[in-house]
Image (cartoon, rainbow, N blue to C red; front, side, top):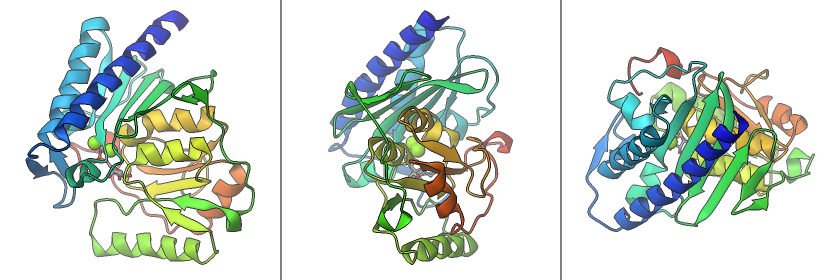
Length: 281
Ligand SMILES: O=P(O)(O)OC[C@@]1(O)O[C@H](CO)[C@@H](O)[C@@H]1O
Ligand SMILES: [Mg+2]
Ligand SMILES: [Mg+2]
């Protein structure tokens, strides 16, 4: 079994690289931009094309495996994680960045068995950084081992978060409330790459002590979650306790101390879970 997952992971790396070439080539082409759950939740033909490319290529090699893909869910497929080997795919994490040529765009592929992520691949294709992790075997960027930051003082920490794609006034209010609380701790900086997957790789790389967000989807965070924990970091729910990747709430930190400190300042809310949605939101 172990060898089987390794060959699946090798395949994920190869197909992520191929997908990255497609994304890189499409970056300066004419992009037809469409919207999904709101006028700021963007999708392009490249997102759909890349997801199909990945799924087709995986199906050829692993015909019994299942898929949760962002654009397939948007097209009406279910988003339920079973115990079966499942590829959890975000073909472009950072579509808004892609549309604006803001240079952080990732292909994110997580692979779960028995509802546990076995490997994660995040390809930051415009930087040509291939982040990988396999359960129990560490996290890497272009083959070099990753280690989270050792910082234990929140006041000397860098925090990453995103504003998300909801513009509902009550949601925006909560987002700004958390942000104000966190800025005023005070932390040394707040950043956001525009992609959850890359934000998590920044935690794994030690550039950022903690990333939190409410509104993520399982395809944004499945791969990154393992990259963070294999680099020595921790995952938690925004209200404390265990993370649930379907809950659309995540804290990924270098340590439990930093995670718990940031959680004190988060004004939590609960968007509809991924696994109860009839379609993408
Ligand atoms: O739609 P995409 O480009 O795949 O997802 C990108 C993104 O909006 O998803 C997360 C929230 O859902 C954010 O962290 C991130 O910026
Ligand atoms: Mg995404
Ligand atoms: Mg996407």
